[in-house]
Length: 240
Image (cartoon, rainbow, N blue to C red; front, side, top):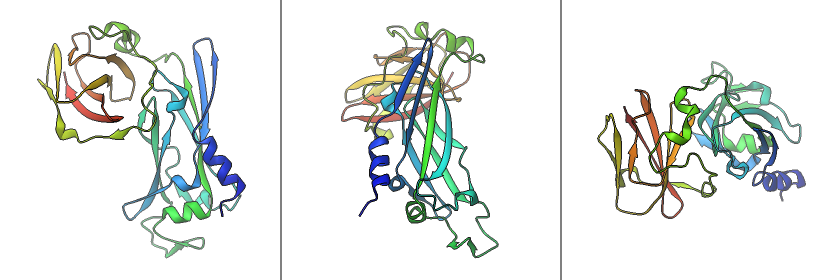
């Protein structure tokens, strides 16, 4: 039977507190011990969903690893502050034992590799805070978000991110790639919207058309995220 703490954390994982002060938005939340997934043979990971906060750009995420029942052993862990797949709607955290692959048979009383069952047993959770505000180090392209794409009004609240699934990337093509002036999205189904990010996971613009004007983007590599039917997303990369 689940403990009361585990039940409460499962509920809290669906929501987050958002505080808006001028141009600053602060959101926070916590995962559940049941959210951990085995990664290969060396460690575990958890996907953190922050879409309930409605961040319009990629915020600065702060994370801590906690044992909600104080069962401990998380001080043996490596990887907590290393975030991956960072977007306005979430991120991923990978963990492993500090000495894995190990020259010792165990860490504490837990054998290597680290498994999701261990994290669940120790009731580990990721507690996170997202802070969205003007970045003093933003590029010119990021500061002119609304003007990047013809037919786009700039970033909008992500109303469809919650519960999104990754779709088959082979069903969508982007051309020409590389391109100087525009990229065209070829897809047989319905496209709800398209987001473009730089390699620092900053949202640069939103479009609702299949032809996207990229003239004002600096030369470089970009990630395009396409929202399609059935609450699915397709992610591709392109070069200008």
